[in-house]
Length: 115
Length: 115
Image 1 (cartoon, helix red, strand yellow):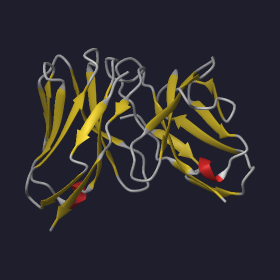
Image 2 (spheres, one colour):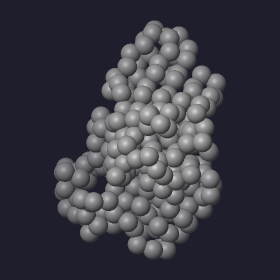
Image 3 (cartoon, one colour):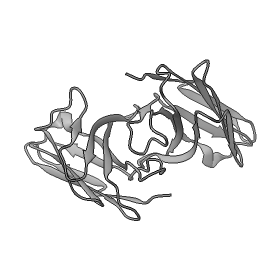
Image 4 (cartoon, each protein chain N blue to C red):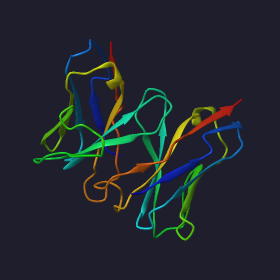
């Protein structure tokens, strides 16, 4: 089955700096890669996703890049703010959007944005 | 995005009690829902796929007689933890499977504590 690795497990940055989280996946059939933000005591919230026919996607301060050949994808957050502090999970799926197909999650990254 | 309501948010009960958790898709019909379990500081682990009108599909190692899933309508899936014991204490989260091109959206989880 699919295996998703995520690094780093913890990341501390100064407010205003950029943060990068990286994931690798094992199954070349995976074609949908969402990123979720989870705040303490809450469920994961979708922040951005990318499909395999796209190499990069951006939404304001958040961007995701995908390298299908190398089977890795990354989350980039620019101009970090304290409210960005949370646990971030990457995931992979073989579905078009992961809606009807199972998601395999990475191990999570605890991001802390310091003032 | 889709709105998923999960209830209750917190349950504390004695060992041997059966606990029912509800997951509702509020703004669209979800033929598929997913149930996850998350231990502290760990990732989400898929327990089962809930299919409207048919039996749930359980992941390897998940006891179907322990974690009973019912998906009787397109907007409601329930997870019942039968005769819960302290080792069943965890954070249980549901998600919608999406419709068409919709990504997965998660409920806010249920914190289950068995004394």
